[in-house]
Length: 412
Image (tube, rainbow, N blue to C red; front, side, top):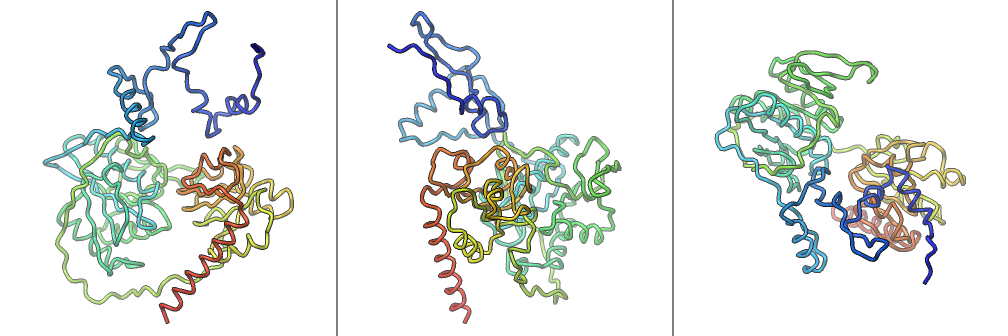
């Protein structure tokens, strides 16, 4: 029997890098191990499980172990613990959070705004509720877990696209009927900044913009391009930056629908003529919403550029692809290149170095195309496709062209 202890350099490297996606999993304490005498020993430090907010919970009743066994019996279906329900039957006041809902779903910025709204309720005390205000059609189903006690949804074609007049009219109706204690908007280019400023002007309020922290009766705002802070009293209308507060992740909320009465606004003076076509190659990486990024696994670069053009995506690259001369330096994504915040990041042939994963940490959705199912990028991705990158890119380009031709024929 061989007794030589063999080292695994890769596991040792992961253990030394706390930013590695597999570091936490690797450093989990072993629950049971066999000692030198052959006896099975239990590690008391490994008792418990990790809760939905990342904190470790002690499982004294062994409920988590039972759920794991149940999950094994159900063919590997993961067990999702039901969060406790936060219910307010008779609210004394409300805090309104007007959400961007980019793409019809809650963004990370929206969740931060809802988290800040609950922080204001906790600081004020009493039976307060958070009212999430949403315009137009959406596909979101997680308002309850995001922290919405009430949901005020203004639906209809008049709220689609760029419609500031109709939206301000609806917000003024909510102001008259609900009288929220605070109005919170995301300070974003997706519409929250403009809508918040317009609403504050209509109400005669002085808004606090670029708010990144609220402490008691004062709020701290960014100024001078983020190089200075301004402290001022808490305003009734506040425009919040991203990561202004921790999102709600330990409770469920009712998300009960509410409505307000609307009067006719008459003819709108602003007409939405649609989006203007923009060359994706001219969009900076830091502002791009859809990025097609290439790594060392891409061999047909002409096809990669053609696919990016067909998909309407901004091109990015890993450091290896840039060092090899396939892409310019300003296209490099990662901690040593550009930090990106795209809604969709499509990584083709990128294994996922730590610096690259740091640069895409704020992306909403990551899709990986790779031949190695065990690489770090596949572990980070929300959706992974295992196969030859050139063949998959060719099929993506074909599907994009077919969809575009269908849309043109339908419009004609």
